[in-house]
Image: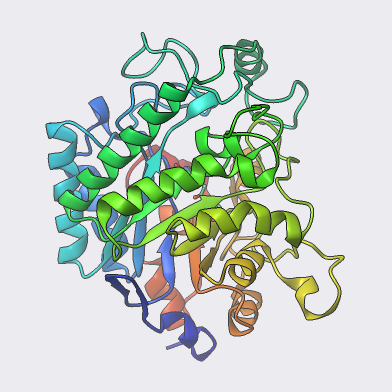
Length: 390
Ligand SMILES: Cc1cc2nc3c(=O)[nH]c(=O)nc-3n(C[C@H](O)[C@H](O)[C@H](O)COP(=O)(O)O)c2cc1C
């Protein structure tokens, strides 16, 4: 055992789930589910991460039971999975069995693309995309989406009606209950990166003047009602993790909150609705979120603030074991390995977060968690790893 990392290999109970350590596979879209159905290759891919001692696997984003949940969103999607229908649910049951057989735990990431979905694409091309206020995002945001996709998305469409909102919430609840019946150990809700839930939180895309818009608290209402409805349906013990981010794919510079007080307005209503863990998505875990705060809090990263503000568990993510963040590595074809785990464990020891999300390192190397435990060297990440399910 690498002594410095020993605290990361302590167990943690979250509701009905007992994690054997703090290493979590971050959700990563892989495009290997033809017809929305995960096959034996997908089950094997997740099982290998559990065999490699990953404490918890969060799946790739999985479309919830709503016709406009999935489509093309300008990130090279092809075979995205969904969480409804007999074949897909049978596939997910096999995935869960395989991960459990290897001694691991697994949460599905419930996903609705919302404004990011291009009209006329996905499993139900006839269904219009849903947008809180009809707005995709700002013109001229810092984005890695193609100019063609952005031009297609910019025209304003109809805002969601009250029944559109309810239909989406109902779809999330149906998929959450399916997940529970498939044997998943908890739920991960994708509330980040400019997808549907996040566009309710963001003032640029939520201009509503009814009860679903206004100040930060009001903009949190959709996320909170969604979590509340899921919590009611799955009972008090199934863990719910909620991912949020400042950055959006429509504009990497976007901010939901400029200071801790603003973050509190956003996160508290969602926490109180029934979230167990906040997953704060940033590209570099080792950055202070609000560095102008005085005192010991000045160094806290976004997960640290989520934990401090809500009193819930928190997960950090972003460049663990790698020198480049996700978008830099996309551009450069990969990232060299980094021994930044000393900085990670220092933050963990100060109580900033309870869980550590690991993305590309685990995509590339199923045995990454074991290597960390044993103090073995990590490998570099190459974009070539995206081509297959190793
Ligand atoms: C190929 C790939 C696909 C991703 N897909 C998702 C996704 O479906 N849902 C999500 O919330 N984040 C997604 N992410 C972001 C990761 O969960 C993670 O936050 C990010 O890669 C940073 O962690 P890392 O630096 O350890 O890779 C994806 C990242 C990669 C590299």
